[in-house]
Length: 178
Image (cartoon, rainbow, N blue to C red):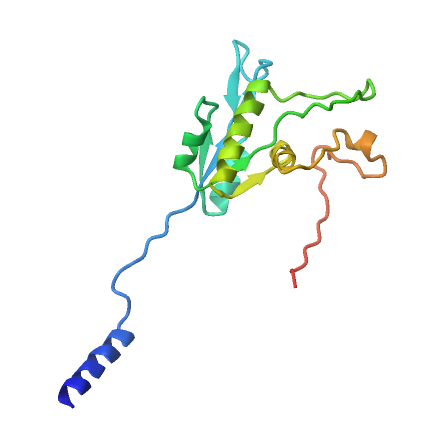
Protein backbone atom coordinates (compact mmCIF):
# COMPACT_ATOMS: atom_id res chain seq x y z
CA UNK A 1 0.00 0.00 0.00
CA UNK A 2 2.84 2.38 0.76
CA UNK A 3 4.21 1.95 -2.77
CA UNK A 4 0.76 2.56 -4.27
CA UNK A 5 0.29 5.71 -2.22
CA UNK A 6 3.72 7.00 -3.22
CA UNK A 7 3.04 6.32 -6.92
CA UNK A 8 -0.30 8.12 -6.67
CA UNK A 9 1.40 11.11 -5.00
CA UNK A 10 4.01 11.31 -7.77
CA UNK A 11 1.35 11.05 -10.47
CA UNK A 12 -0.70 13.76 -8.78
CA UNK A 13 2.33 16.05 -8.49
CA UNK A 14 3.11 15.53 -12.18
CA UNK A 15 -0.45 16.44 -13.19
CA UNK A 16 -0.35 19.62 -11.10
CA UNK A 17 3.16 20.73 -12.06
CA UNK A 18 3.36 23.53 -14.62
CA UNK A 19 5.03 22.74 -17.92
CA UNK A 20 8.73 23.20 -17.48
CA UNK A 21 9.60 23.57 -21.14
CA UNK A 22 8.48 26.07 -23.71
CA UNK A 23 7.20 24.91 -27.08
CA UNK A 24 8.29 27.23 -29.86
CA UNK A 25 6.14 27.58 -32.95
CA UNK A 26 7.83 29.39 -35.80
CA UNK A 27 5.99 31.84 -38.01
CA UNK A 28 4.79 30.35 -41.29
CA UNK A 29 7.07 31.15 -44.23
CA UNK A 30 5.00 32.26 -47.21
CA UNK A 31 6.61 32.32 -50.62
CA UNK A 32 5.64 35.06 -53.06
CA UNK A 33 6.72 34.52 -56.67
CA UNK A 34 8.13 37.73 -58.06
CA UNK A 35 6.67 39.37 -61.16
CA UNK A 36 8.65 39.63 -64.37
CA UNK A 37 8.68 42.94 -66.22
CA UNK A 38 9.81 42.37 -69.81
CA UNK A 39 8.46 45.73 -71.03
CA UNK A 40 11.05 47.78 -69.12
CA UNK A 41 8.53 49.60 -66.96
CA UNK A 42 10.46 48.93 -63.75
CA UNK A 43 14.02 49.04 -65.10
CA UNK A 44 14.80 50.80 -68.39
CA UNK A 45 17.97 48.78 -69.09
CA UNK A 46 16.22 45.43 -69.35
CA UNK A 47 13.94 42.85 -67.75
CA UNK A 48 13.44 43.06 -64.00
CA UNK A 49 11.76 41.18 -61.18
CA UNK A 50 9.54 43.11 -58.79
CA UNK A 51 6.79 42.69 -56.20
CA UNK A 52 4.51 45.15 -54.40
CA UNK A 53 5.49 45.59 -50.75
CA UNK A 54 1.86 45.24 -49.61
CA UNK A 55 1.99 41.44 -49.98
CA UNK A 56 4.90 41.06 -47.54
CA UNK A 57 3.34 43.65 -45.22
CA UNK A 58 0.07 41.70 -45.14
CA UNK A 59 1.84 38.42 -44.44
CA UNK A 60 3.84 40.03 -41.63
CA UNK A 61 0.69 41.57 -40.15
CA UNK A 62 -0.85 38.09 -40.08
CA UNK A 63 2.18 36.70 -38.21
CA UNK A 64 4.03 35.16 -41.13
CA UNK A 65 7.34 35.71 -42.85
CA UNK A 66 7.33 36.59 -46.55
CA UNK A 67 10.00 35.10 -48.80
CA UNK A 68 10.29 36.36 -52.37
CA UNK A 69 10.80 33.66 -54.99
CA UNK A 70 12.57 34.73 -58.19
CA UNK A 71 11.95 32.90 -61.46
CA UNK A 72 14.27 29.90 -61.70
CA UNK A 73 14.60 26.68 -63.63
CA UNK A 74 13.81 24.38 -60.69
CA UNK A 75 10.53 25.76 -59.36
CA UNK A 76 9.85 22.75 -57.12
CA UNK A 77 13.02 23.16 -55.04
CA UNK A 78 12.01 26.76 -54.25
CA UNK A 79 9.18 25.24 -52.20
CA UNK A 80 11.63 23.59 -49.78
CA UNK A 81 12.03 26.94 -48.01
CA UNK A 82 8.33 27.80 -47.58
CA UNK A 83 5.18 26.55 -45.84
CA UNK A 84 2.70 28.10 -48.29
CA UNK A 85 2.43 30.28 -51.38
CA UNK A 86 0.78 33.56 -52.24
CA UNK A 87 0.52 34.15 -55.99
CA UNK A 88 0.21 37.94 -56.42
CA UNK A 89 -1.61 40.04 -58.94
CA UNK A 90 0.08 40.54 -62.27
CA UNK A 91 -0.56 40.60 -65.97
CA UNK A 92 -3.51 39.28 -67.93
CA UNK A 93 -4.25 35.89 -69.40
CA UNK A 94 -5.00 36.37 -73.07
CA UNK A 95 -8.36 35.23 -74.42
CA UNK A 96 -8.52 32.76 -77.29
CA UNK A 97 -11.29 34.73 -79.04
CA UNK A 98 -11.17 38.34 -80.27
CA UNK A 99 -12.41 41.19 -78.07
CA UNK A 100 -13.56 44.69 -79.03
CA UNK A 101 -10.70 46.97 -80.10
CA UNK A 102 -11.07 49.20 -77.03
CA UNK A 103 -10.36 46.28 -74.67
CA UNK A 104 -6.65 46.15 -73.88
CA UNK A 105 -4.80 43.29 -72.23
CA UNK A 106 -1.43 43.44 -70.47
CA UNK A 107 -0.20 39.93 -71.22
CA UNK A 108 1.65 38.01 -68.54
CA UNK A 109 5.16 37.27 -69.89
CA UNK A 110 5.44 33.67 -71.11
CA UNK A 111 8.48 32.98 -68.88
CA UNK A 112 6.49 34.18 -65.85
CA UNK A 113 3.48 32.05 -66.74
CA UNK A 114 5.59 28.94 -67.33
CA UNK A 115 7.40 29.36 -63.99
CA UNK A 116 4.19 30.05 -62.07
CA UNK A 117 2.51 27.00 -63.59
CA UNK A 118 5.44 24.76 -62.57
CA UNK A 119 5.51 26.28 -59.09
CA UNK A 120 1.75 25.85 -58.63
CA UNK A 121 1.86 22.25 -59.87
CA UNK A 122 4.64 21.42 -57.40
CA UNK A 123 2.79 23.15 -54.52
CA UNK A 124 -0.45 21.28 -55.24
CA UNK A 125 1.45 17.97 -55.48
CA UNK A 126 2.80 18.68 -51.96
CA UNK A 127 -0.69 19.67 -50.77
CA UNK A 128 0.76 23.04 -49.76
CA UNK A 129 -1.60 25.93 -48.92
CA UNK A 130 -1.93 28.35 -51.85
CA UNK A 131 -3.62 31.75 -52.01
CA UNK A 132 -4.05 33.68 -55.24
CA UNK A 133 -4.75 37.39 -55.63
CA UNK A 134 -6.15 38.59 -58.97
CA UNK A 135 -3.78 37.00 -61.54
CA UNK A 136 -2.83 34.41 -58.89
CA UNK A 137 -6.45 33.39 -58.33
CA UNK A 138 -6.97 33.15 -62.09
CA UNK A 139 -3.87 30.94 -62.36
CA UNK A 140 -5.23 28.65 -59.65
CA UNK A 141 -8.74 28.62 -61.14
CA UNK A 142 -7.47 27.68 -64.60
CA UNK A 143 -5.30 24.91 -63.13
CA UNK A 144 -8.36 23.48 -61.39
CA UNK A 145 -10.50 23.54 -64.54
CA UNK A 146 -12.35 26.87 -64.37
CA UNK A 147 -12.90 29.31 -67.21
CA UNK A 148 -12.27 33.04 -67.08
CA UNK A 149 -14.17 36.18 -67.90
CA UNK A 150 -11.36 38.12 -69.58
CA UNK A 151 -13.05 41.51 -69.53
CA UNK A 152 -15.98 41.94 -67.16
CA UNK A 153 -17.48 44.91 -69.03
CA UNK A 154 -17.62 42.80 -72.22
CA UNK A 155 -18.33 39.36 -70.76
CA UNK A 156 -20.72 40.40 -67.96
CA UNK A 157 -22.14 43.85 -68.76
CA UNK A 158 -24.55 43.65 -65.81
CA UNK A 159 -21.67 43.38 -63.32
CA UNK A 160 -20.66 46.53 -61.50
CA UNK A 161 -17.34 48.28 -62.09
CA UNK A 162 -14.42 45.94 -61.42
CA UNK A 163 -11.68 48.46 -60.79
CA UNK A 164 -12.09 51.36 -58.43
CA UNK A 165 -10.55 54.77 -58.89
CA UNK A 166 -8.00 56.24 -56.52
CA UNK A 167 -9.23 56.58 -52.93
CA UNK A 168 -12.45 54.68 -53.68
CA UNK A 169 -13.57 51.82 -51.48
CA UNK A 170 -16.31 49.24 -51.38
CA UNK A 171 -18.46 48.50 -48.37
CA UNK A 172 -18.20 44.85 -47.35
CA UNK A 173 -20.49 43.00 -45.02
CA UNK A 174 -19.16 39.98 -43.12
CA UNK A 175 -21.29 37.29 -41.60
CA UNK A 176 -20.17 34.39 -39.46
CA UNK A 177 -20.52 30.96 -41.02
CA UNK A 178 -23.11 28.91 -39.19
